[in-house]
Length: 250
Image 1 (cartoon, rainbow, N blue to C red):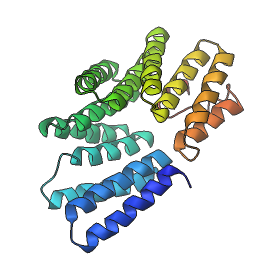
Image 2: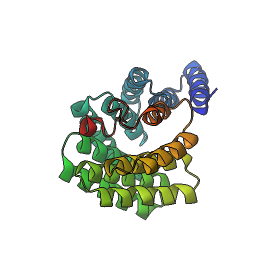
Image 3: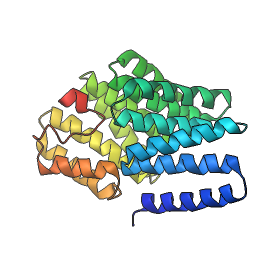
């Protein structure tokens, strides 16, 4: 069983125990974590459902800073389902809640995902603004995973602006951080970005190599691993492109 599924089961059991003793705040936190695992597994409807439960639970208690994470999980799932207007609302709320609470992790990740949402919505200037802000917060706070997230958002924004040089620089920087800090999931995502840049340049052998490296790094039951396998089945298959660039490639 993959680690995302195992983590989901652990959070589910922890939520049951918290509910049994009336710990509503912990119930909300564990439900939010279950939502995050569902996003990673590609179970987007479940992710949206759990995020909604978590947000409803937070409204019944004094909301801690991690409420921003529940909003972010909701936004991430909605974004991948193509519901961008709704995603923008939740992701902006995640960033705002993190900033107000002094929760730099929530603010940085919220801003990075807000940048990605703006990018996909065609709001390129806003995407660069939010992505740069997320990158600054992450670097000031030493949040290396958030730094990778911000670089990915900036990389995809450059990709969609047809600036493949800047896109490659952002993705390369994310790879360097991910390798140094052993962040395999982010290395895979960044290599996926580099593969798209290579394909856009007509460098199909390099694209294949990058996607093979990404596939070796992805959790085999994570949603994006299926998409990378699709790339390897045929680089010319326009239907086998990741959700981050599907509107651009289609």
